[in-house]
Image (cartoon, one colour):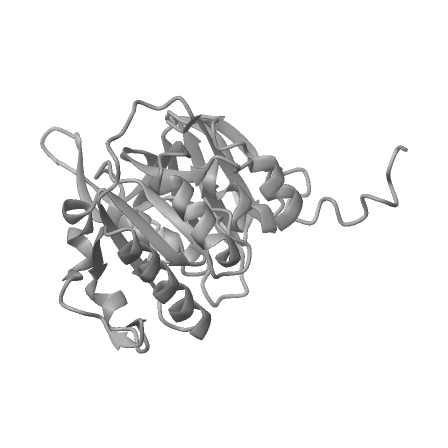
Length: 325
């Protein structure tokens, strides 16, 4: 399920604020420090995960992080906080999603990446926009995730019943991608949806995306933009060998099954949200379906999905040239 609402049930004020970031840019450290100063000025409890606390240069008013700030392992952030603020790009938000999904603790993003469809607060608006959220002025958004399982089917010789062994599991907020790794060969695979045959495909791979992920890798492969409120899953072939193959949007309740054909000549790989990929063999099945966990996102009241598309995808680049006035 994925819902926008500004008429959310009244949540108590946020008191324990988690802070997460990723090393790599001096600008991220600057924004982390600015955020921490803001939270201290508001006399809020601050919880920083150990990975973020280890980033060189995190200062508070010229001093290293003091004892009033709690440092905790990242996987316990959901137990320690009532709001988590992430400084970084959408990749940082995806990392946070894997930890915060199912906790009921909302996540807010300050963008220090490139596009920032998930982390949508600009750093120069940090004080204003984060302040609004802390004052209770925000949109509460629920985004669903996908779960992947790679299973190996064996046959019981006595009953001929299929036995299922789960070899690998993972979750994704954006997408699950079947790809050919470093190979230049296409993948030969079969697709079923709700146990119904769909097609046999020769392609560089297949992107299975949530509405959240429709503006990420799936978009670059020619997939549609899906509004985050829709309960849908998008399947986007990557460079299909048949020109008639097109992206397919199915119900969010669908179960997607992928099998590698016996004539396939390369090693297919499967990855979730850009994490390390694992191989998929032709005697295994990849199953993708909606996860039972969801992620809560917060946006400032001024947030607009369409405005995000206009500005981040440059829809209005030639607005004056094509003006109807």
